[in-house]
Length: 287
Image 1 (cartoon, helix red, strand yellow):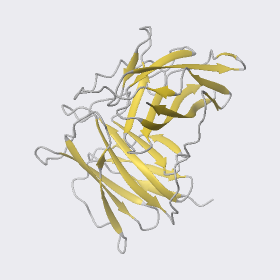
Image 2 (cartoon, one colour):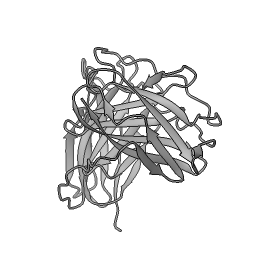
Image 3 (cartoon, one colour):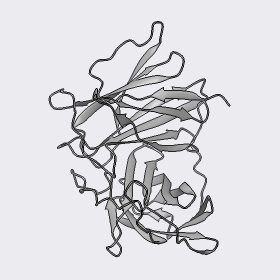
C-alpha cells in the first residue's frame, strides 16, 4: 500500500515557498475546543511536492506575536491527533521541538483521504488551545463517518474494554466508568501512557469539536480533565501530576466528561498494556 507523509512545523518564524515547483496550500486553523476561548490563531502550510510536508504556525491572537513558551501537558508540549474522515483511522503523535523553535514530525497515514489534524497544546499563560486542520492526502473520495453503534464493549489487542454506559449527559458532567479485562479477569499488566492511566479523545461527529480527558487515580470517582470539557469554565483545570512509567494502573477507573451539545460522539480510549499501546473505539450518544 502506498503511503503519504506529512511533516509538521510549529511556530515557524516565516512561511517559505518550499522546494522549487512545490504546490503550497495554507490552511487556517479552526478552533476546536468547545468550552474554551481562543487566545491564539494557527495555520498549517502544506507543501505537496514528493512527500507531503506542512508548516504549522501558532500566533498569539491578542498581539500577533509568535508563541515560544509551552507548558508540559501529560509529558508533552504538543499532542497531535489525526483522524480520517470515516473515523476508522486514529493516531496520537507528538512533534519534536527543535532548537530552531519548530515542532517537526513525519506522519504516515494508512490510505488516501481527508484527515482532521488536531493540534493540542498549552501556550504558557493562554490555557489549553486546540486547532483543527482538514488535510487531504492523495486522491480522496469523501467518506461519511462510521458511527455504527458499538455497544459497551470493544476488543483491543488481548484486552476487552467495557464502559459503564454509552449515553452521556449534554452540558453536564458524566462519570464514565471503564473496566479492562484480559482472559476474562481484571487486567494486571496495565501501565501509564504519557503519564496517565489512559487517554480518552472524544470527537463530536457533527461539529468535529474535540475533548481530551484522562482518569485521575487515587481519588475515588474522580476524573482528570485534560481538555476543555467543563461547561462554563473559561480556563481548563490544571493537569494532574504525571504517573511514573512503571506505576501500576488499576483495571477499573473513570473519566469525567461534559459534552457541550446533544448528539453522537466517537471515543478512542488509549491505554498501555504488556503488549504496548492499545486503542478501543466506541460510539456514544449525548442527550
